[in-house]
Length: 77
Length: 182
Image (cartoon, rainbow over all chains, first blue to last red; front, side, top):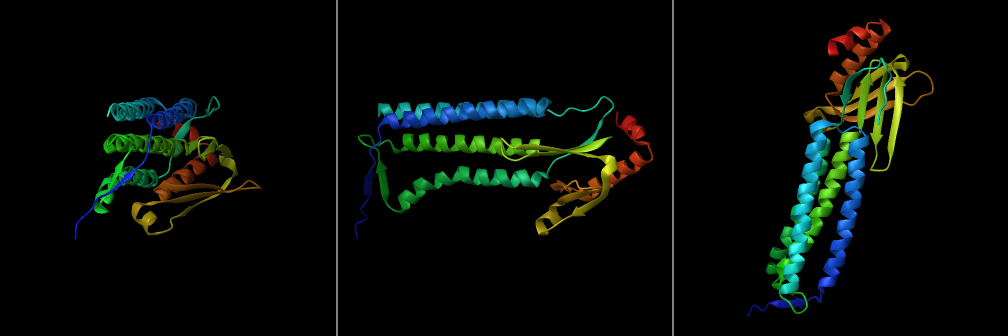
């Protein structure tokens, strides 16, 4: 029997990806503000706070850059 | 922010056992890897997905995967923050129970040492027994509610510590204990 590949086409304009991106970035910024406030005022001190903040931002920014790169690549292909 | 009186000193703090946060973070880690199965599933079903004019499946996949990971990353830090802020602080005057429930609910209760009547330990279940964590109950005189801290490591040791502090508090020798800690 012939093995036929089924192709599903989902119409996805890049604008939708940009809107989703904007939404998740706003969510991230709000949560970063809330978490930062909690760490500062409710007693997470010293190295734990510095380490948590650095780790949180580095990985988040990496993921945001990855998302932007993916959208730009999607737009150009 | 927790404010203490001038002559008040923190004797120790207790947080939940690391197994609790490890379990929550393991679930998040598992969820992080889950979308990686999608390409294999599509291949197994002999399906190919394209997006409009373009055939760049991978750029869309990477976008949604990074989107998913960012949300999980934030949730992971919310769990960690809740874990870190949920604490019992034992001072030479009182026990302070700070309960963080979600990001926007925070409850602080105080229990003065002279009101404590009894401290009991409860270890329930095979995991708790093996990993040595459990609940600590502090019963008080009067109408105040019972204080419970859930899933603390080595609850028997903490019960002994609190009993020791109570004895010193009754004997008025607790300041000697404070001096040894400072």
